[in-house]
Image 1 (tube, rainbow, N blue to C red):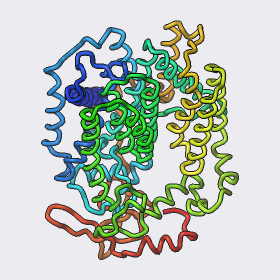
Image 2 (tube, helix red, strand yellow):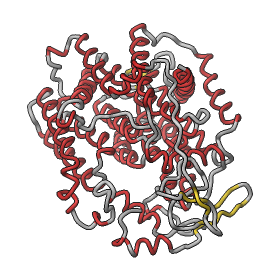
Image 3 (cartoon, rainbow, N blue to C red):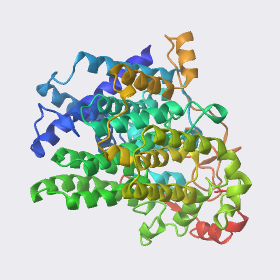
Image 4 (spheres, one colour):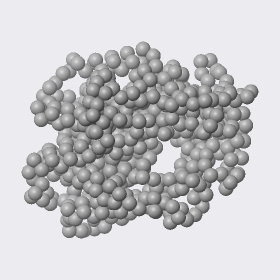
Length: 558
């Protein structure tokens, strides 16, 4: 039970930080805080997303000057949370609203009863967060381990939620995104706006169908990641970004706050994983076509520029690249720059989903598609296509020119996924995007929902079935058998050996360091210098990645 107590405290603190942010945001954008509406639904549905965004970016800024595991950092967060108590307003909390939110919260809490660490947490996530907690930002940290170069905002958020050495609490930020997603889905479902209802129903049916099909189901809907992973969390942020971009497109008169929140969600998802920045293009087009005055445009973009300045400066310091591992964004004049590192890592990211056993060999041809990939992914592709077909038939409207346009866009999105990141772990945002695009003609239409779905009881049943099935059945079994259990998740321990004449340790076996900051598993060596209070990690062999790239044909992995 102690786990539930701490997760509840983390949830409330995040919620209140987000509420404070919204209060001051509404003042800047001249919105009524008492009405508290964003995209025509209660603003409290967004507070936890705002809170996570603020926690992560404050951690980024704080890390320029020290590790975040300091009382001052947590006092800042507590102070922000306490600011909103002078503006308490219970108007937007109906009895039904409270019951629904508690039900969603309770459902996702159950998922922590048998949660385990992801493999990537042991490889680099935990160590990355340990650096953020213990040390000021490190110049050239990606030279210690190339995966540190990714430097996702989720590492900074996760580093803020550690409690002792029980890593079950690292799951809290993921669950807060899941809860927010379902808060928004429910608000859409009971909305008086037809297109909101339609979006919610399409996604809910997709979620329910995820549990039926070949080999027990899976069609690309969200699932709760293991602790430390955030593939599905990013998928939800990506999905929310496209939902609210679609609403901006459909709405005749969005509020200033709507434009701001859509941009914030795009920035948030892009900081978590750079693919999220792809929505900047349609967002800027929508902004260009809007009737926003210069004052509101300045307020919206100035906040994004400030956050982006710290974010991209952090990227340059950690990896020498504005966006790692895109080589064109790297600054070769920086002392810690490693030529060809970004190029090799970029190739590994593209090759691994194609053939994990020969990631570089799969880059020069498409033999992998038939040799191994299709047979491994056949089940969920078929399940996705069947789900797509059933939902399309369920919400069918007479095709028009827009329908063909949306179908074409869907094929383009699917093709891009196949070419660049054809892995199931990356499929969720892509598949839900395709789902919404193919049914956009129905969402835009004035066609009423089918008569069988007008009953509110059926609406609620669909919602709760989808919600309950999002959590694995094993979690429910564990909860029922040990409801008072306080699940403890700890990293493994292994033996290390000292690197002769050079910095650090390496594992005696394998390529996993677990929770050890000075361990890295690769064959190269590094030198650690100091300038003032900052560490600079430099390669001992400046040509390591150049040589790796020249001999890429003989390499199976990185």
